[in-house]
Length: 202
Image (cartoon, rainbow, N blue to C red; front, side):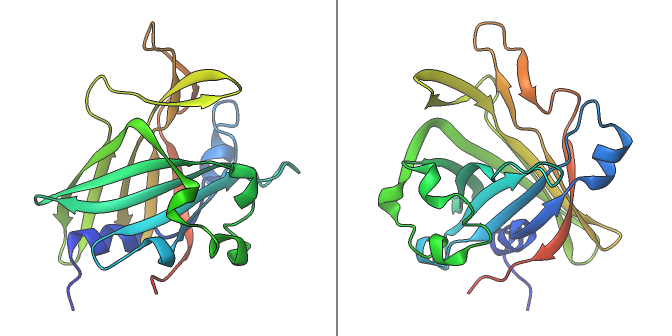
């Protein structure tokens, strides 16, 4: 059965990703990352797919960080991805691999963010695959409170299957709102992460 573009996107994104090869080739600019994108069945439906995102550095002994939620929907024929923060990120630290923590997540745990909805374009590639490209509208930056300060970020990703390998490019980076310059993240181009494991939608 052919999946809808929305379900195809959700299937592509659900999994564990790593940029080991990129980090080894250019360690000055790309830290070795492991990224989990776990389905949250309790916050999903046939028309809404919600993912918990969390990442870590495999070469570091630091705990997972940058917990966030991405909700995929289709509005008037267009795909969208809305990002949410968590009221208490520490409550869900490690939830990507400790699913009992994730099962407790509810709508009340999510925090809506300004300018956090990415527009997602897609095109067919070959007989069965698609390429998806997501990004915030031109000149828009998502913002959130951290350490008592307002922080600004650009959010975006591309994902497609290449030679039976699922490749995720992430463009997320912190932004100086006064100059538009990047402060951290994908400053020298996207992080290129390869899918290591796929997660099913219940």
